[in-house]
Image (tube, rainbow, N blue to C red; front, top):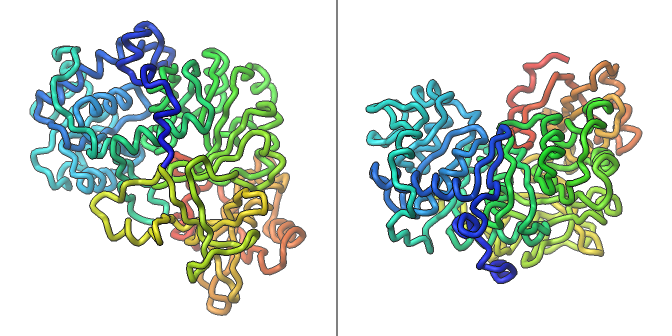
Length: 518
């Protein structure tokens, strides 16, 4: 196992350290307001002492529901100071989804933004913990404590508590639920720290970076980048919500050096009018990490052209695995379609359906042995065990590897289409259609077919003002790929369903099938 802690100067790590050494350095910037490391440390001390005062103890779990805001990061830091596990919840969740996460995680407290009051109120009758505590800005007892008042009245000195952090899950992050109910992914404090520093090391972060958070903080990757940036003493610029032009404005204003974004965000930036894009100076950016979903090669070429060569890293991984592979800047255009090589410390095997290793160039299910792996699914040892084989873990991604050791994600096993006994990979068809000049976005799914087992269905978002027909789509695919890969049906829609972290929700497309008009 690679111990990434040994690759850093431990005397320069942690919010407490930076508050002492650089008290006036900006830690967080949001809505153009600055929170220094001294202020961040004192606020999190106050919140930690507050949590103890209202009955939260080491080993408990607390849920957090905010849009991207300092409150999320303060809550995480405060929880860590007293050995409590924080769970950041998707702010788009409805009451049923919210209550599921709170119940499944066995949270004892919910800290939330006042804008979610209606959702929280609707969720309360569904909660199993009848002694649940609630904290929000402007809260009024007995329904909720006032977050701001609690912090004002609590001491800002370090909490006096034995946390016993070693072996206690310091993070519990729920999967995006693209294929079913979200599962809680557990990481101990030791695992979490090693994973965060592994990200920092492999993506060449420094102690002096300015990082912009563009994705939702309940998602594993934006959370990881924000967390290790604060551990290293960076300045973190926090976007409440992603907006392409606002992203460029903030990069220019704060001379941002690093970011993690998804291909959907790249697409929105690239599709801004040239006159708007040209107003902003993004030359300070030196490391743009793209992940979360397949990065179409045509879009990648445009991104390299806009941001400049030598800046884009590609990241492949997941909530359970963290970083599996990375594609370095010099390989972005040299290895089309590749997600890179295994990062330091990772071992990867590609296995067939009989769990035999496949040869280079052949497709297999990706299994990984890694220092970044989850400790397990929360309260679900059966699911954890089912994903392991001889010490290697999988989430069902299908891939191939070339002779040089570069990996290519073909698709997820659950998304593969079997038509007439032939395996068809939607990602391959999507990659082709991304090249069509009239297509903005596309999603490919398989639906049941009485003759072929499954047939291919395409959901297409046309570019504004573009004219394209169902036959155009079919002919374009037929010109590039074997005829059996042509969609049998094409639906034109205004937008495709994505998670806020950039993953296309193909199960939603399957559920919607037959309910949209061509």
